[in-house]
Image 1 (tube, one colour):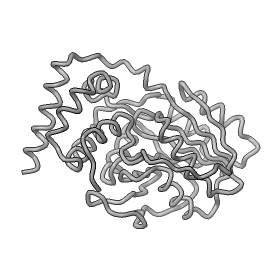
Image 2 (spheres, helix red, strand yellow):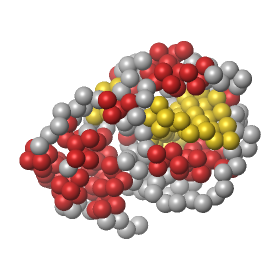
Image 3 (cartoon, helix red, strand yellow):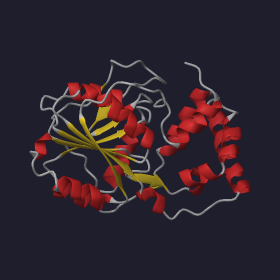
Length: 272
């Protein structure tokens, strides 16, 4: 697979990477589109879904900028958006695979904060509902994300009783596959929709209601299109925007350039 720096930039800014291709399958499941500014909206959706047995409900959260965000200013999406030309220029020092590895390592930083500190309370209130976290990050980030969630007293639980496994039906990329670990899926840069379809084939009790929550509209569309094969399922896709209220200092072009040049140079030294 061949990629250029422009592709890396665009995909990193929306945390898409390989979720950019189109799918023109007709939608056959019942779909609702929602927007949410905080977790109270997700709470109300679950309260209003009382016609469903909680065991038949699946809520899927994205990780980056939906549950947690890096509080390193130069790594935050707002500053990358503001200096995207500089970001693109700096990444030209790297191949696609190198950039992917570096950015993945950086997004697993322990310097992250919960976007909403009521997440644990929400999960406990709806303890009978099935929850998943699904990130497009590389396989190796699953453990880092679990560690971050555990550090913040967040336990992702469901009733599927699945052992941890790798999705070996997908090709290897950067020595990894999509993986499921303790309620967290990292898709290893495969499209979220196709990995979720593969996951649901392993579930004996199929969900009747799926609520998919992500900050990226593109990923929401991808999941919507991918789940057309499900029958008797209602899908609610929620574009989540609470991260935009995060208090992250703006950085100057000079500071941004110095930070990212240092990150790239340190990464290249570590690869020798």
